[in-house]
Length: 243
Image (cartoon, rainbow, N blue to C red):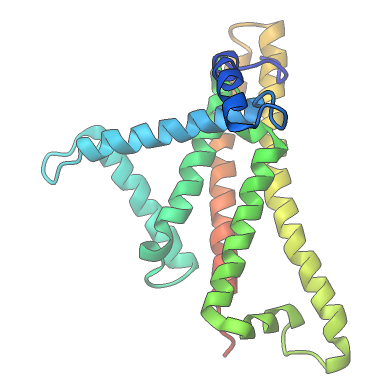
């Protein structure tokens, strides 16, 4: 499927939006909701529905397959957080990292259905995620160290006073590079995979795209893991204390 086509939700949602937008005074600012906004809302609804279904079907004894699968995922995320950030990190950061993981993976997965579009093929979505992640770990760093968090922007040591401006600039650039890296990596991989599958599907509609789709499913998992792993590493670095 070509990347410029719309999902089945695009037109119905915008039909509703054209009726609602004038009432709230947003018709001139947002006359049409972009595809990535529509699909992001769809993924949000799916996450809420899955959470509701899991909550209703939660059992202490004889759990169903869905609950068992979810418990395995939660345990894996908890172990990763404990290993990367430290003891007690799972309790503190599982909702945050789990939310990132669920949203990103389901968004990536949308690219495997011909009637949907992956929100993560839009740089607006991937950079919104990367900026959010970086703002959060800075907030956590300030909360942990207070004004002393600024010392992390002066490099190790810290260096001589006359090097502080240069080190501060380099540290700022390194943090901006983190935003760029998280956003571009996720966007580039999902967009490229989605376009490639669409092209091959147009040429050979049945057999040839299947290996690419399987590879794309693996890429959806890998890109999700890389994003949450790097976010966890950044949180650990922001909260770390010098010894």
